[in-house]
Length: 277
Image 1 (cartoon, helix red, strand yellow):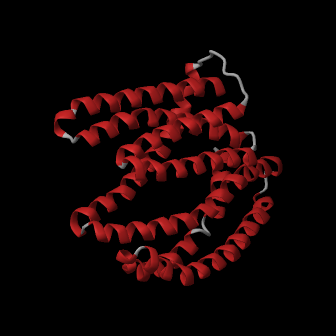
Image 2: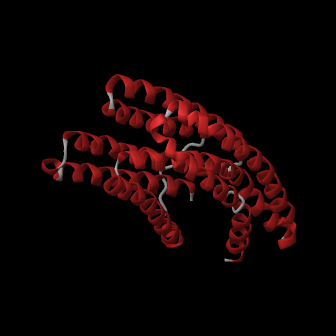
């Protein structure tokens, strides 16, 4: 299965990259040079992101969470530094080049760390059930990403760049908070599956759910309380044009707190449903 998925992921990545490159050339007369260059640069990024995702899944399956976090952390740190340098030195073209280099770097770093050779094996019979199971998840992910991007486009078109900045700044802060339960979910979900497969008892997962909820409730409450106090003066000092961010930010921080408490229940339901299927 691992070998088949490796070749399938890389094949899909190649097809997507070629399709985006072809779209760039077909639309060249109707888009700006920056858009054309961005589409060409993003084509191999699609391929690299799929390759990196394959490696991430393997790391999680092997429960190598520490090594995965270290490799992702170093790669993201390098990307952040290069993004700042590229943006200041070359503007948007520099950002796009750094995005490409960072995607290739992450894919290479993760693949090198796996130390698992890939055989030239491709079993087509494994793909239909996997694709059938994955279509609803892909559809949901596409719908989510479409809706998440659509709101920013509507705000930019109808309300202007200043309001888009207000909205984006609020979204960035709240999304940063949501990383905490996401990281915890990455570590805990395999343990949910392992415990339920071993005991075949729903009650055996009770402590896993309760401990996560207690940790999230206490840690996030303290973090959000600090943000409510610290963020408004920081925005006023560093982003004075976006001080209107503060009132909606307070409301969204409260909503984000309760949203962050949902992953344990989601893991619980997904584990039971998956095992029953």
